[in-house]
Amino acid sequence: MSVFASACKGLRRRFVGALGLALLMSAPAMAAEFSDAQKTEIGQLVKTYLLQNPEVLRDAMVELDKRDKAQEAQKRETNVRDQSALLLNSPYGEELGNPNGKVTLVEFFDYNCGYCKRALDDMAKLLKTEPELRVVLKDFPVLGPGSVEAAQVAGAVRNQLKGEKFWAFHYKLLSTHGPVGKAQALAAAKDSGVDMDQLSKDLGSPAVKAGIEQNMQLADSLSLTGTPSYVLGPEVVVGAVGYDELKGRLDNVVKCGKASCS
Image: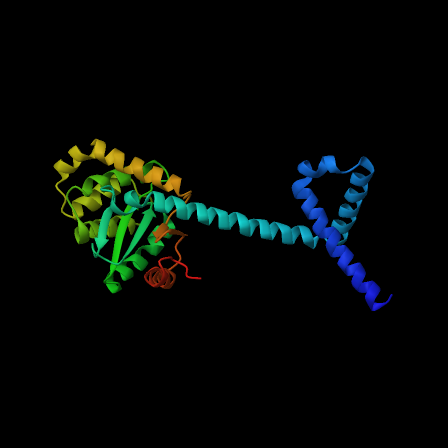
């Protein structure tokens, strides 16, 4: 076979593959434009090509996955902007760090989340080393009744402890070994100097319930399914990514307004 013939064959194979994928994606719209004989011939060409080049399907699925993730990220960014007031300034989140900081990091967490426990010291280091950082903590109790109970106690504790004092309670409770529920949360509150009689009254307040419900709705609007999840600028960072990764993302927000600069 000549070089020219070989090149033509390669071009034909690529053309058939591209045509086949295009037809697969637009088959309903184009079906009426071909005769039955043409449809049969095209179908056989596509089948033969895909059997000989199955990697085309893999490549197409990889590309589709990339596009789906890009669309999901864009949707999240839009929702973050739409929900920015509740994310950044709701009374149902605890504010830490510099209240006038240049960058705000919102963390959704669960007191029973092992990855949140692992990420706790990352947050502690950021608060210590980043003078322009403002942090907003949001309970996202998705790991069972114990998590909901702990979030309820934390919501009531917020009525008495703010800033560094709440952080001390939060650190104590989140670093607890083993399952966390109401008993562990109450013990952490007592050790933190909370008025336990007042806490008991606040536990059943509408504000505590409303805070958890709002956080759950916010998380749902951002398609969050696990903890920890962070909101930085218009983007969402999922998982215990570590101090260095979070620090780099914070620097990016200062630099370009987004957690990932292009």
